[in-house]
Length: 166
Image (cartoon, rainbow, N blue to C red; front, side, top):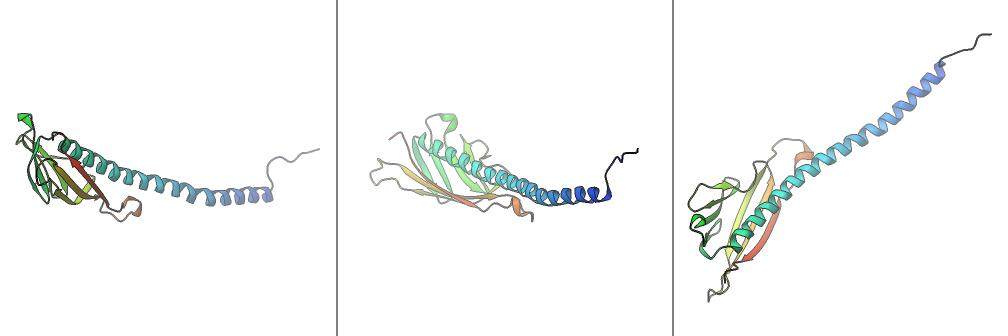
């Protein structure tokens, strides 16, 4: 007596159909997970750069001994160390820059991000006892392509700091 081995045509069609259904359900789900991860990474780049820039501005203002000059897009701070005096933070061509002791300017934000605005406001008291600076900047992703998952809406960061040496 001979026993049949292998699959029948009906079984083969059934297995292929089940695999097709599972694949059409899993592939879009996996693609969505990949796209969400890419979007999250792009957002993290912008948010982390904004946090780094904000904290550096706060650090420099807190540790200054005085304010030399404040304009809407730059600030010049007096420092106790001669090698750091003056410390200038300004905005040029999409970058927030810092220069210390008359040296060359260094960008605070990466080339992956772009600044669209920076505003400093001096709220120093009339008797000069409280030296207080407010800053507001807007940062966005530097991606210019059409892929939606890389486009991050711009974020605006606002902070204010007092000089500690008062």
